Length: 375
Image (cartoon, rainbow, N blue to C red; front, side, top):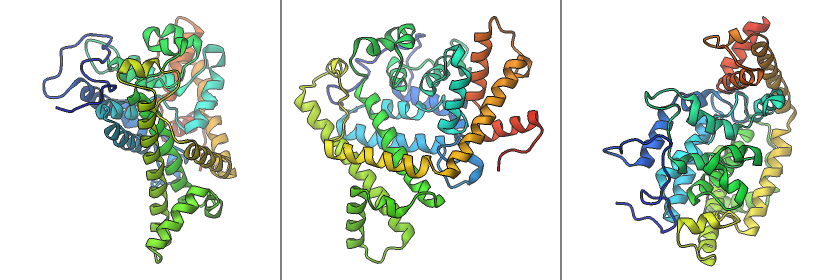
């Protein structure tokens, strides 16, 4: 039996499911959540949802699926080092992007704009909506009926208005306090993962300037250490080794800094974790500054690159056009539902569009507009 730290989420202090179920026979409740997420249709669709580069641009770039797997791997490593619940951490990591739109953040921005008169759209809340309502697999309840602790981890941030309607799940956003350390790990692992794999993808695509990255202090330090050990390393393996070394540096730092915070704040239980006003998962100040600088470089050099911006603009046009089409003719939605209000129709339309893969959205847009998909 796994020995957990006293502040971990365990079978003895976990929250309930919305709909009571008998316990699993050969696995625990946290493994059940992870398995339900892996087997759900929204998880499979992540394979064809973009991270930065649109899916049809090449099969070597990250997708939401590979991103989620990388977040889960980093999360499990951190959880193990801290004596926390690895299965819960993995479940949260695998589910955190289930509600993401096609075309990454560009798609989310466009769909949120379309939904401004109907409550807006935010992929974090949509992920929760997927696991609580939209997945339809079980005879006794809607959604996946996940544990409170898994759903809590999926909900990384939340407005006051939405928090009020979420009951216990939204309480921490109204009263202060934090989610479990397992949830905090998934959040930090998400940031570490996308920084490093976007750096890798950007370099591979030729959109990210290696010399600009070499201006980052940590990149320069790690590259220097790598070349001292392997002076004849070819460019490809040098890139991978440096990125892996940087990732390891950030992960090692967050483990050490978090352990120091847990000790310094006298954290001895899950309740202590939840009462804290600030997250316990943290970098040291120096490494946090390096983390922010890396994000800044990626924003200016990659996310705002003209090619990426051009594809983002075309992607947003697809999302806006599809929203208009389905709002003008609800019969175009699967099963042609009857809506009780414009708000209900808009939410159904946003659910449908958010669930699309990149290539399905492009194909549907081409079908309705009578032209080929973006190239």
